[in-house]
Length: 149
Image (cartoon, rainbow, N blue to C red):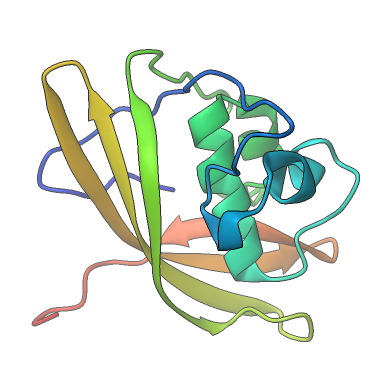
């Protein structure tokens, strides 16, 4: 996720997710260990751009900077990533996706990520571009806002 909202949030972890807790990505009431946890642990790779985006949201929520950096395209990956411990990612809405399936090489996912921190809250809305690198889905960049959208 790149930042883009009227109130610019800082990235921050919540407490690490317990294996039996609901997955932060909110997908079908799945448990963390059966959903994004398998991607964070490296026991599976996200098969679609949407699942990679959901797993990256969950990584922000649980503070897994290692996964965030590993799933970032090498061309746009920062050298390091520091998360703000006061910020909590509280809800994800997937608005839509284009391509990004098992047989595609690129795709986009539009989403809203809701956050809070002491004294304020906000929403990060983004249309992200994902591409395969070495066969695996990676986050490339946030697409610019579309005029009139």
